[in-house]
Length: 181
Image (cartoon, rainbow, N blue to C red; front, side, top):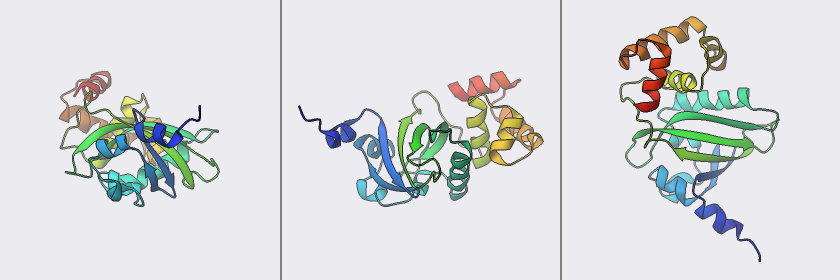
């Protein structure tokens, strides 16, 4: 039996994207559904169309390059934006650069919509969204600061803002509320 890889790609139960230089070369049906987009709105366009802001797109790109493992793999939870309507939602993204020495040259990425499990507070700033995502990953202030290029004290200030917005009395309580919001 000859496997039909194109059909398997199109009908995969998770969103899949092939990329080159941070441009979407191809994507499957699940990605189109998840981002409320048409093929023409994604294929041939920059991943930037899937981010809440240009700054978040740029910072995520830098974070990916700095955090790839030796095999070129990367994964995180981040806030993305649906193309049709602009709704923000939590998304788990994982994948790999096909050449770890040139991370954005070519890659394959999977996307999982987490919105059924995690809601996003509409009044979070882009930096608060980034810090919230890294807190949920279990990162410390020092680790978050290193990844984002800011001081641990700056991370603590943002953590304090998040705790106030989510009415959390401690970091574990904040993480619990971020996960169950």
